[in-house]
Image (cartoon, rainbow, N blue to C red; front, top):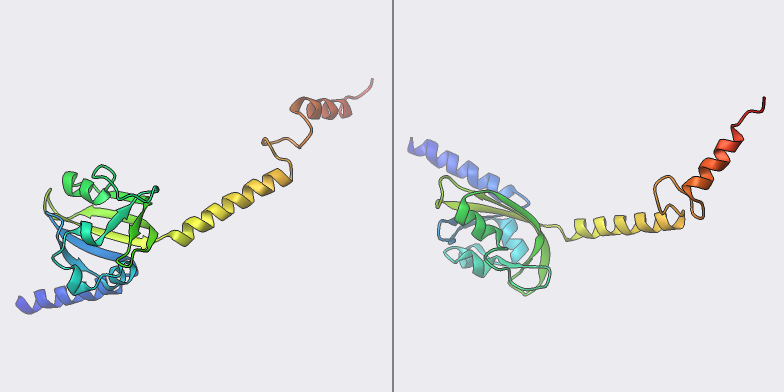
Length: 173
């Protein structure tokens, strides 16, 4: 049994270490018990430095105003408090070096209320930038072709389009 448990633990470690997303495990009081290599790379904290620290020291969550999030905004605090999974893609994480990146964050409870949580996160800065660029291109394209309202052309109204179309299809007796 001991060797089977050891094998399962070894396999789990291999899987967690292979994941591209940052993975951090917290016990019920928010103390870091695991931080995978991707998380270490993203936030700049080494395994030995981060283990045993409160998550708030290592995972500095920043809102759109570049302020640290309040307890109400903090998805990790919410899940530690109510044991319900939360996803967020509006916050940034400030790294140990002081830089920050827009993060897709998912926080999931472990077991019963108060057992702890798993935090996964990834850098979504480029994805959000691409989305903004596509939206900007769509707005420019819409303006360029005069499609101010669906089904209309610039400089014409619905009525004039219907009238001209209606007259062209009227058959004389």
